[in-house]
Every structure is written in C-alpha cells, then in structure tokens.
Image (cartoon, rainbow, N blue to C red):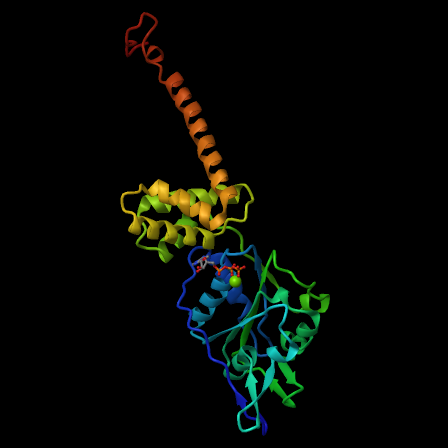
Length: 306
Ligand SMILES: Nc1ncnc2c1ncn2[C@@H]1O[C@H](COP(=O)(O)OP(=O)(O)OP(=O)(O)O)[C@@H](O)[C@H]1O
Ligand SMILES: [Mg+2]
C-alpha cells in the first residue's frame, strides 16, 4: 500500500451451511447487492440472542458468494489500530505492519464479519466510520496509509443481545443498517439444524432435544440451538462410554451439565405438564368415544335409516 508493506491476515475456513430461514439469508444477500453503477453495498447488523446462528448466517452467505471469509472477533480490549493496522517489532528491530482481517478483506475484495461488535468501545468504532458509509476506506495513523475498499468487499456486523459492554454510538448505528433479526427457529428447522450438525444422533435423542429447546423458546428462555448441539454431543458421548444407560437418562444428565440444574428442572416440569395435558386429552378421547355414544338408546347399534 503506497511504499508501506502490509502483512495480510488469513481467511477462516468455515465450511458451514445455513439451514432453514431462506428469508433471513435473502435479506443479507440483498444488502450486499449492487443494483446500479452508483450504488454501494450495505453493511447490515445481524442481531439476536446468543447461539441462534448469527455468525453462521454471515459465514454461510460469504460461502454462497464464493468469497473468502475474514472474521474480526471484537472484544472490550479491541483497540482502534487492531481494527486497521498493527505495528509489530521484528527481531531485526524493523517495524512490520500487520493488516487486520478487516483491512485484508478490503484489499482482497472478500467478506468480513465484525463479530460481537457491540463489545467494542466507542473509540474503536470511530476508526471504522468512513468504511461503513459511502466513503469505503480506512485510515491507518501508525502506518500512514489510507486503504480503499475493493469493489467486491462486503461487510456485516453481528451483535449479541446480551453482550453490550459499551453503548454503540448513534453515528455508528446509523451506518450499520439495516437490522437483520435472527430469532429462535421453528421446530422443523431446529430439528434439521441438529441433524445437520450431529447426523449420527438417533431420532429419539433428536426428538428429546428439539422438544426441550422448543419448550424453552416458548417460555422465552435463553436455550439456544448451540446448547442443543452440545446436549446432543455430550449425551452421545456418555452413552458410548456407558452403553447400558437408557437414552432418556443420558439426555437428562447432559441437560443438567450443559445448562445447569434450572434447565433440568424446567425440563422435568415441562414433561409433567405435557403428561398431564395428555391425560386430560386422553380423558376427553374416552368421553367422545364412549361406546354408549356410538350405540343407540337401547344399547344397540343404530339402524342405517335413523
Ligand atoms: N440456521 C442454522 N444453520 C446451520 N447451523 C446453525 C443454524 N443456526 C444455528 N446453527 C449452529 O448453532 C451454533 C451456534 O450458531 P452461531 O455461532 O452462528 O450463533 P451466534 O448467534 O453467532 O451466537 P453468539 O451470539 O454466541 O456469537 C453453531 O454450531 C451453528 O452452526
Ligand atoms: Mg456469533
């Protein structure tokens, strides 16, 4: 870049597919379209609870575009220069300039995900302001260079509902638009996601896990698809090491150890409630199919003419 040599970052190799809502995938793909010569791609923020698939959506969209993917993991310690160019002293005493994943993606015309970006301070965000609007460049003070984004460069930001360390400043919020909201998946979608990740799990265990997760979603609890994948994997490992234990038993232990005793109690109560409802329904079934209802007044089958 000019007469400064930048050492580029490496892309991540995340061979993951997006299962389920094509609506969400379509929204992200639309943001990245350039529809006319004067148009620029948008940098949307993908928001939602932990473990619902925000990073996966961005990574899968990059994969569908056939572009390399760079992920910048943002933390409360991220400094402005970490986002752009970091000077590193080499053994010989010379300064070498390391380009961040963001700058590398800008140079290569790739996709960058600013992951969990709402953990960063306002000072760090400031260095990205010109990148996130129509100007599409960043400035490295330490290396003394301005880096323009390649026309194929695409960007998105993920934000975890629960993890705000700092308030995201308004002038940045107005640049990371629109918002794409990832919610909990429907039962059939969630089952497909679990199957995709743990395709060797028996149907019974998949059923127990998806019912538990869906019960959690209905009760607005933070049990995510990621938790479901961990429960499945742990239950299967327990079962492999103790084959005599029933699947229900290893499932209960996995829920307790992955999510804690509250989740286990929630599951027990949910099952009791379902059993209770089932018994009531069963009672109604008896009521409606009472043999005497089917028989005539005298206890005989009614005539066809009646
Ligand atoms: N629709 C989906 N298709 C495929 N995999 C999914 C989907 N939704 C969730 N997953 C899987 O669930 C796990 C959690 O997803 P991911 O890491 O993308 O969540 P996240 O929303 O980014 O979480 P966090 O807020 O903690 O960063 C991953 O293993 C991911 O592959
Ligand atoms: Mg994530």
